[in-house]
Image (cartoon, rainbow, N blue to C red; front, side, top):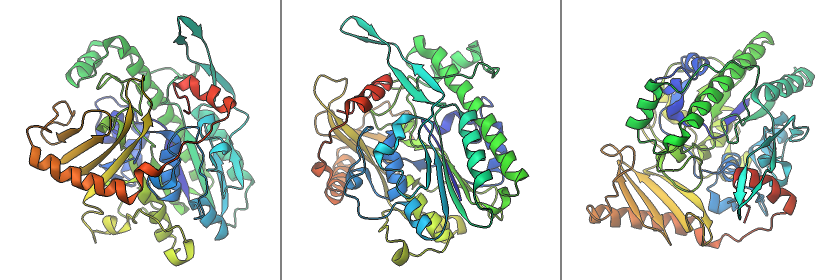
Amino acid sequence: MIIITLDTVRMDHLSLYDYFRPTTPFLSRLGAESVVFNNAYTPIPHTVPAHTSLFTSHYPSEHKALYNGWKLKDWNRPLLAEVLKQEGYQTGAVIASMVLTHWCNLNRGFEFYQDQDFEHQVSMMKKKKKKKVNPDFNQRRAGEVVKWAEKWLNEIDRERAFFLWLHFYDAHRPYDPDPNYPAPFQLDPEFTKYLEQNHYLIPAKYGEVNTYDNQLAYLDQNLEKFFQFLKDRGLLDQTLIIITADHGEGLGQHKLMSHGLYLYEDQVRIPLLIRFPDLAQAGTRIDARVNLIDLAPTILDFLQIPPRRNRMEARGQSLLSLISGGKKELRPCEYFERRWYEPKRRVKGRKAGALCGEWKIIWADEEENELYHLPGDPFELTNARDLEKKKFLELETEMKGYLDRVKFFSVQKQTVPKEIQDQLKALGYTGK
C-alpha cells in the first residue's frame, strides 16, 4: 500500500486533467491504469492540517491541528499508519520538507519516518520593516524522495505487507529546480495568452507560474522512475497506490500566488487517482465529489479491516461504492475550512465553505460572505450573495450546521517553538 501526496499541486495544471501543456505525461498514462477522480477536494488548504485530515479521516476543527506548526494533540483514535502497523504492516514515510516534521505527530504508527538529513537549504528573500532577511528552509527534491523510498523498500521484509507514504514538495514555493533537469517550458506568448484568458491576475509573476509547470514536469519524471522501480521489483501489480495532493495554489488567480488565505477552487480542488493491484476499473473517470477524509476509509475497506477493528471512527466514507457504481455521490455537500488570521493581515478572522450541488458558499466572521454558481462562474469572479438571497440563506443554514457539528469555534491556539516558527517563516507562515 502506497500513498503519494504532491504538496501544492493544482489539478488543472496537470495534463492528466487535460491541461494544454504536457506537464505530466507519466501521470496521464498512469491514469489509463487507474480510477481518476475529477472532483476531489481538500478540507483545508494548508499542509499539516490537510495531511492530518487524510490520516485521521476527520475535519480540521475536529482534529484541531489547524495551522502549519501545530501538532495533533489529545487524539485518542488511531491514525491510518497505526491501524496498519497493528495489522502487521511494515510502515515507512519519506517527508520532503520540515513542514511535516515529527513535531506534528503525524509520525504516529510509522516505524520509519524520514524527516531529517535534508539535502538542501532553500532561501526565500523577505522584506520586513525595510530590512531584507533571508531565512533558510529545509527540503528535498523529488529525486531524493525516490532514493529514500527505494532504500526503504529494498531493506524491508518482502514476505510482509507494507504501507509507504511519500511526500513530494517540488511544486511548493520557494521552488528549488534541479540544475541537472532541462526545463521543458518557457514563458512564451501562448502561455501568456492562456494566463490572461484564465484570470491569472499578476503578470509580473507569470515567470513563476512557468517555473511551477516545470516543477510539475520534474516531479512527473521522478514519479515515473519510482514506478519503474516498483515494476522491476515485482511490486507494482501487487500494490494499491493512491496519488493525491494536500491543496492547490493560487498562481495569481484572485491576486494570490500562494495558498491558505482563500477557499476558491484553485486552493481546494486537488488531483486524485487510485491504481488497484488488479487494475480494477482501469481508465474509469468519476465525477462525484470526494474528499481527502475518504482515503483512509477506502484503504481500510479495500483491505477488509472493518470499523469495529480499526477504531478510527472515520468521518469520511469508502470510495469503493462509487467505483463499483453502487453510489452516485457520498455527501450532498463538501466542506472547507481556513485557519483564522489576526488583524493587520491581508485577510482576517475565520472562514469556512460548503459546496452543495452547483452552489458554493464561503462564510466568514470578519470578511465578506460569498456565494458562487460554479457552472456559470467557474473562476468565482462574481459574488452572487445579494442576487441570490434565498440560495445564500439556504447554504448559510447548511454552513452553520457544519460549524456546529465540528465545533468550529472550540479550537484553541497552540504554542509553537521558535525554531519551528523560524523555519515556517521561509514560506510566509508564522505559526501564530
